[in-house]
Image (cartoon, rainbow, N blue to C red):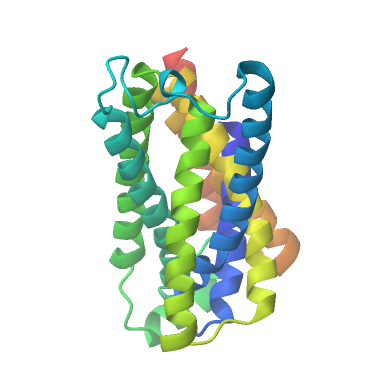
Length: 267
């Protein structure tokens, strides 16, 4: 889960910067779809080759996560995967919205006190908007944890579950990418390359998150996730050269101490 907490701020930073070049629109994340599909098709190709060598066939009903032993459809796994895709897609879009509106409202961790005051005085954006978006992200994370645990009890491999999610999410994103490109605002080729990197990092993030939620305790995993604000701060200080004010540093420390306390209590 610590790897997820490290990857997530990187993804958030990439999305936040990508939004700047698309007139503040979070639809820039749709460019990740190409990276998703490429990596996941590569995984399925390798898996097919290995299955052919070990079992003599690429696919069989008895090894399918969506079919029961009696040949019926495993609706729990099927529905669980679709719900997980929905949560993941909403979380990515919400991540971009949080980054955008937190800066608009002047409560970004890397906004100085003077800048924050100026933004709050001139902006009509309420601080409640990014706060509510953050609350929504917590709800999505909780739903994700429940979904992973339910399908794992049905014999759905965590690795396959992660890749199935990515493939469907990638196909959906490419569809939205095409629509946005021809009907709203054209994308640049650099957008695809930029978010290809983001997609690869996100793939690792999804896999580690699913494994952590399956193997670990929910409270402990959630506590470790809260340390991502520390990594987010380091990334923005390093690349944006922005220093947070005293109150923001105190809030950051309190958040990390709270996460550590929860983790120790769970142990």
